[in-house]
Length: 76
Image 1: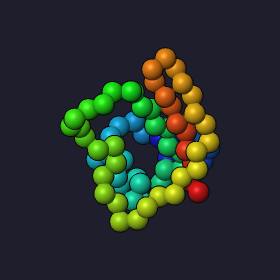
Image 2: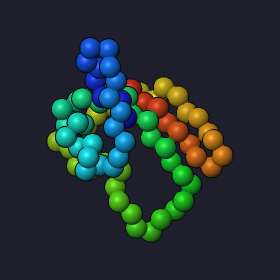
Image 3: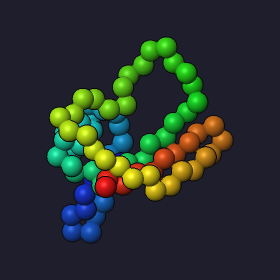
Image 4: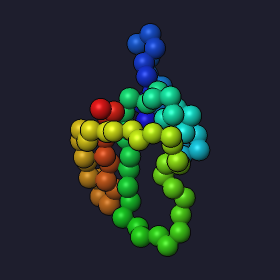
């Protein structure tokens, strides 16, 4: 995930919902890169945790690498 630029530098966040929640709540993330692996699980951890507002996204790109699918979104 790519956080907002400051002085021409990018910040990359790699992690799960608990780490990302404060950045998402303040709209500090410009680009979401989400990889999915085709496994159906009976239980698991949520990708994102509850937020006060929805974050509308625009799908920009999809790449398939073997069994992995990468979705790249930008905030609308």
